[in-house]
Length: 290
Length: 290
Image (cartoon, rainbow over all chains, first blue to last red; front, side):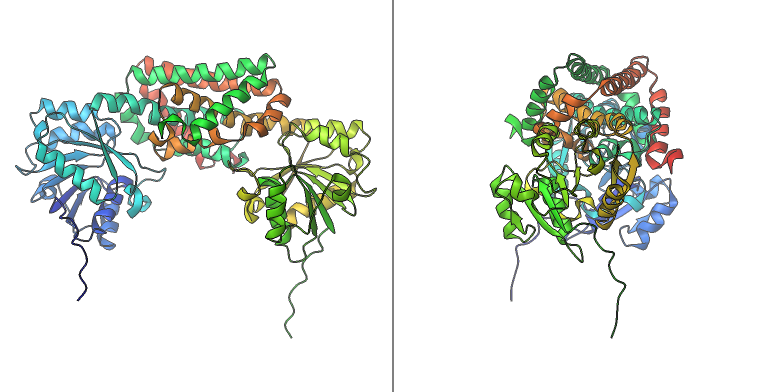
């Protein structure tokens, strides 16, 4: 008889998903692909998403309301837009099982973290931000491999060591690469690595549209540069409302960097731009960070 | 006996490639995949590229010098960076076969077009700009399908109807979608759809590097937005030198679009940005252009 190494014990028996779109749906798929999958229950505003999840066997139950969703769930995952996140968490407080761990997949970690500490629920809260996504929305856009191999930022205020260890084991089991940081440091970093690229794509789309140019006029590079213009405004609404002065600073830096390139062109000094491009290519290839 | 429809006759018997990197190498591969492929000859500064092309059967001959390259070739294709393009064309003038058609794959069509007209060679010159590319360089980065399904801008000053018809048939046979324009209109358009996205990616890379952030910190969106930062400065050097005031105008528009987003954030009016994102998504999905 051939025996293989036992899979590490998954740290949760039943996962409750609040929201079942691209992010929540992909999480459900990944959970159900584990060697020893937990039970997966979801509750979402789009009933069609839940129906599809049931039909393909990703969901064990589609909950009719939050009470039913949380009953027996030892992990609660909020996979909804930032704009509704704190409100929903506050509303659901008191419905979570006494020992349940709570996390969310939001792009800002300050607002949920602050709320949970204020509510005295910080001991069970660990924030998650997987660096994954796509321009699609809904369960139809979800896929099993969305979180595989990608970095996931984890933040904890007063969370217990047990909550932290279980959340880290959760993401590790899904094949992601968890990294710890603080909510403040995380949100400052996202202004540069996530929010700035998004708004840059929006600015570029605005400029091209202003010239009467469609996306079908673009080559592969231009198409890459405008893919994020297809992002969901609903999702970004809450992120932008919670964005601080760091994003303004990032946008101003971007304005300055473009102006510098323009002035070099105006001065007929294309070689200055070429030198800059050489530096950018070094950065692209890994620079001193690898 | 089963007979299939005859493949349309390819309009050239022997193609001479000046340059055999990503663009020229991919062209060679596509030519050799035709049902009735022409002979393909190349000459390039990187001898290793030619050796590889011979080894995999994409090249019939690696020419030792331009004379050998052009002998018997009824189509000459310049697949070299914009910076060296006009100089090489001028140097080779007089070596082309009397009836040969000449084209190039450069990203600006004004400089080669003007030169050929000035040399009295305009009758045989049709400019090509396939909207394809990638961040790799050299024959190693080439692939057969690079030109399949993509738009190719064609420009002609005083080219004969015969030269124009043959060039159009050439690209159609390769599965590309030729579209006619003028060199001036082409170059103005490229400032917006190609050069602006490139320099925007460079500005973003500069900003991120300035904050000590590596590309490995980015999610999928940010990675898309910085892929062009890996572009070849050598290739862009000639494009930037030939770029006119239109690119400065495009950069200034981009600065303004970013400043507008920043001011909305500073004023606490995130909803203005969300409204803009909704418009951008419409544009992304096709807008009034489709």
